[in-house]
Image (tube, rainbow, N blue to C red; front, top):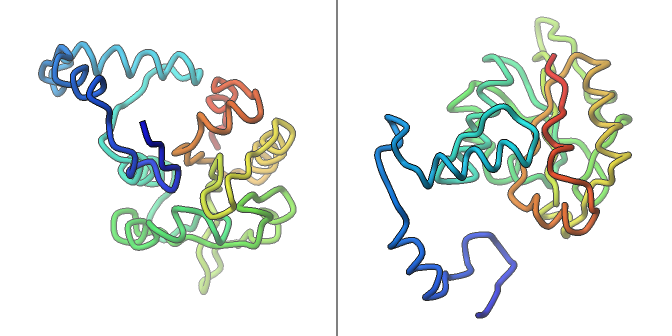
Length: 193
């Protein structure tokens, strides 16, 4: 099998993968009757330390649902200038959530407490309220850099101190888990404002 790591969408499934998909037990997911989707959602929720999970067909959809849930119209979310959501989903954030993304200069796609604090805005008449932080683990345009446990804690604690929600774009989260040995359940412990 030829693995192409440029994107999560370019590697083609093997015959075995296609057979498994064709033979998977299915049902209506709207009524909670799809055993494969239900088992997947339960397994991921358990691995990541959440009470429930929701399978969606694309990373963009997952990111945009989270952004909509964590923000209100007219607010902004702070993220690295090389982040996937800023570079590839910025219009979606504006259209679907009426939110703008505030890019800051991090290091290899990662931001920390210093950058988050410097980016904060108060919501005066001429500026939006900063309400969320978006991080990406592992980074895409940052060359695959991964947050260490201490860096994740710094982001979490800074967000908590400033009353910000945190969203982790985890398109490459398994790469980060493998590289850093930080368990996926650590990601499920983000504070809610």
